[in-house]
Length: 215
Image (cartoon, rainbow, N blue to C red):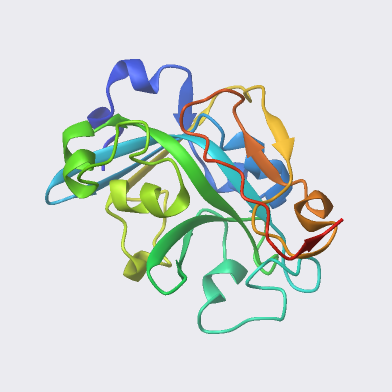
């Protein structure tokens, strides 16, 4: 998809993402994705979302919240490949969540796209999310994937090639870090302060502490 489909006012201050820029630790990549624009083109048209909130996940043996923690499986195999590819999975058997693979091949880390604001294709996003307010069109990981029109079967797609466009801020934006959502056990999400967000941005989702979090 050519970058020209994204309006000039949206592209201002952004540069095309490269494999090298994404081949860093997920905890470093997370903040770099804030303010980035991800666009997806289908037969219906193009929807682009400016990212407001993400969560970083590390790999084998490092992060018990990561799908790669216990090793490579058919489900998570894309996490072990090159950076910049899409890792999509079902949450609670019904919601599709989207992740950008991070790091060098074998790192098995990724960044979950938790929320954003639709900046192009608003009418199409509204049709995909009937009844939702404009603020809530992509505010939350499942809502974001629906607004973009990215299905589970897209897992393994290259986000640096059509039908996607991924643009990063030319300079990192100010951000806040906090506990990752839905973490159980000692310390809860505070043990993993890898949720990154643009303070006060309308695309940031509500924080939900896991009911079995301790401490």
